[in-house]
Length: 342
Image 1 (tube, helix red, strand yellow):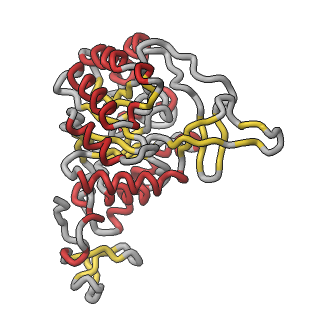
Image 2 (image 1 turned 90 degrees about the vertical axis):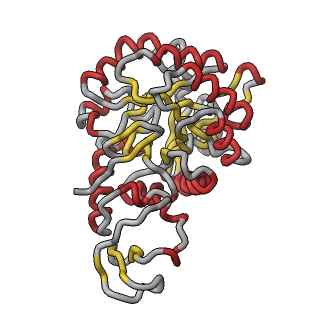
Image 3 (image 1 turned 60 degrees about the horizontal axis):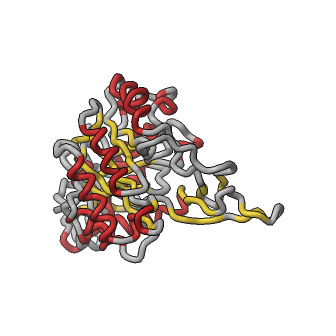
């Protein structure tokens, strides 16, 4: 048996695979293909105080190794979510992480308060990539002070039993500084990265491909950026759990994020063409650990930060086994010994 259990700010999850906000719907969409209760957790689309129609079409276009979207946080609002979507997820015993969004600190706090007494909510994820209408539309995630102020307000408005996770953007000068501000303000965990701002132009029509001109890039193209961000933030805040997000398609992609410092991951764009991607990736992760003789996922969190010379066993990338002996690789192969990452 491979122990895939992980924790996220006091929330224990049976495995590290989550959906990414906005890509798995509110559960019904993916529930046609597998039991959503099998996931580590289902992360909802960002829920706002009031219904939002979103941006005009076309709002989605493919790019090399990725997708640009300009949906504009379309959604029915908190009232419909509580009445229609959350009960469905609770019936299926899904662990639900509710992503929240708004145009002001007060709107975020309002949604957080409404979720506090709702049955079935396991955690709250703050989408920091929304424009702050009180600060000339500047994105909350762009400034440590603004991010910290928002996280503090949501933490105060949310029962202590519910972990609060701040979702960070890589479209900033210093993501570590923003992460530290969020942790200081009371965030129990961090998720990263959100989509990257981008644009595509149709060379036939000579016009932007999206009605909204610019959009948000997701998919494999952003994975190296996401891994870098996870690595940097884990190095600065090793005790803060991280959800790694960005272009995850396989179990080995999950392993890469875990080695960088993620305790869990969220799968997004891959579900658009493979609705069963989450459960497939979970199987692949378990197989990858078994091939490497690793029986506990938690032992690998942040392992890439550990000096190679301090290991008595190392993983041979060619055969997927642990090699006994010194760090030069001499010796016979045998299953890897468990090692702490702290």
